[in-house]
Amino acid sequence: MVLVAAFSGGPAVLAAQEAPKVQRYVSLRVSKANLREGPTYGHRILWVYRHKGYPFAVLNSFDAWRKVRAPDGAVGWISASMLSEKRTVLVTGKGRAPIYARPGDGKVVALADPGAVADVKTCRRDACRIDGKGIDGWISRTRIWGVGKDEVFNR
Image 1: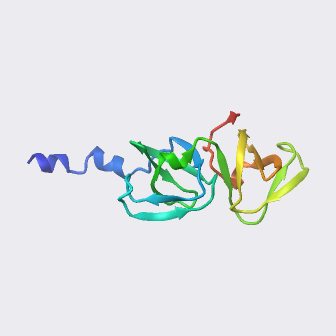
Image 2: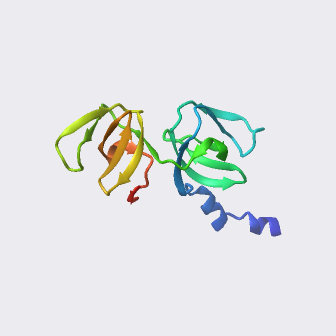
Image 3: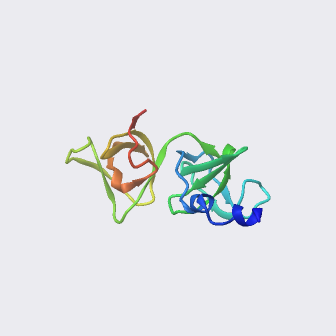
């Protein structure tokens, strides 16, 4: 009888169906890391990431492991030693994304290919200042992954 009450589909079941909230964003500290099914080296490898600076959203923590979501939606566990608190973003969308000299300015200083990774310095409501391969400028938030929807900051 107790088991029936505990697993009757109450609030615990509803909470399990909700997508986990992002705690913060981090980046890959190393040039190769394994995304695993669970928080130990014994768990199966789901994906291998090979791009230093690649951004991830942290969903949860367990010991020295972080449950993360990658820009493509893959979710799994990465050892915290493989991650950095350094903020980076991934350029998304179709076609090259314009990088502007100033936010709201019409002067394009560069074009970023989808999949490019850049350091992020500042984010306003509509644009973020990025630096990648010597290019420093502003990109629309609609063209990047790695910052929260309403996140505003200045580093």
